[in-house]
Length: 62
Image 1 (cartoon, rainbow, N blue to C red):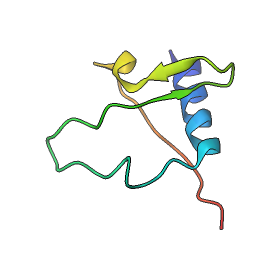
Image 2: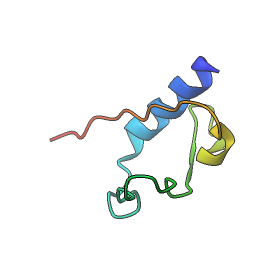
Image 3: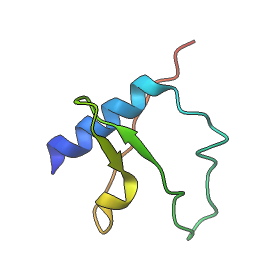
C-alpha cells in the first residue's frame, strides 16, 4: 500500500497537473475525481484509495 501511494505521488510530481483541474474543494467536500499514470504507465485513480490515507506531494519547479 505504501509503495503504491509513493508511486502515485511520484507520478503527480512529474506531471505538472493544472491547479484549475485540482482546485481545492471546500472543507468537508470530497476531492475531485482524477487519475494519472504511475511510473509503469498504468492509470491510477484517486478513487482506488477510498477509505485510506493519501498524501499527494509534488514540487513546483520554478
